[in-house]
Image (tube, rainbow, N blue to C red):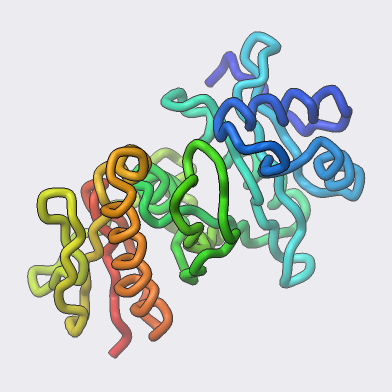
Length: 259
C-alpha cells in the first residue's frame, strides 16, 4: 500500500468525490445515499472522522464515522467503501484506528450484514473485531444494488483497539479460531438452502451462504429464508448471552454459549 495515501477530508469537493465513490459502489435509489455531502461536511467540521484513500490522486476508498457513546471512548464507523481486492479497506481501518487512539478512544463499532461472507471474514479474522449484538431490520427498507429486496438485519461489530487479538490483526496476523470436536451445527447449508439444527451445545456453528448478494438477484425467496434463519438462530443465541468467537474457513460463525 506504499502508493496509497490516506488522509482526513475537509472540503466540499472532497466530500463530493466520496459521494460519487459510494454511489458507484452501492448504486442507491435517489435519496438513498449512505451519507450526503452536507452530512460529511457537518461531521468533519464538528471533529468527527471523514477520511479518504488516494492512489495517484484518485479516490479509491473512504470512511465516515462519528463519536459515540460511551462519550470519550468510542467511535462509530457509519460507512466505509473501497475498491475491492486491493487491501484498501484494511488500510482505511488501520488509519481509523490510529485516528481513534490519538484521541484517547478505546473502541470502534460498526454494523455489517451477517449474511455476507467476505465482510464476516474481514471483520472477525482480518481485524479481530467481534459481533456483540444482532439488530433486526436495523435500517429498515434499503433500495440499492446490494441490499434491495431483503431486510437490513445487521450485526454490531465491536473493535476493542488494544486487545491482544486486535494487536495481532493489525500486524497482519489473522485471528484463527479452532472448532472443538463437540461443536454442533445450529444453521447449516444444504444445496444452497438454510437448514436449522441444534443450538444446545457449548459451541454452535452458524453457516453463511456462499454469495447472498447473487442469491438475492437469482432467488429472492431463498435469500429471505437465509435472512430469517440467521435471525432465528444467531439472533436468538446472541440475545441469550452467547458470544461469537470466530469465523471458520470463510463459511460459518463459531458461537460459544454461556454455561
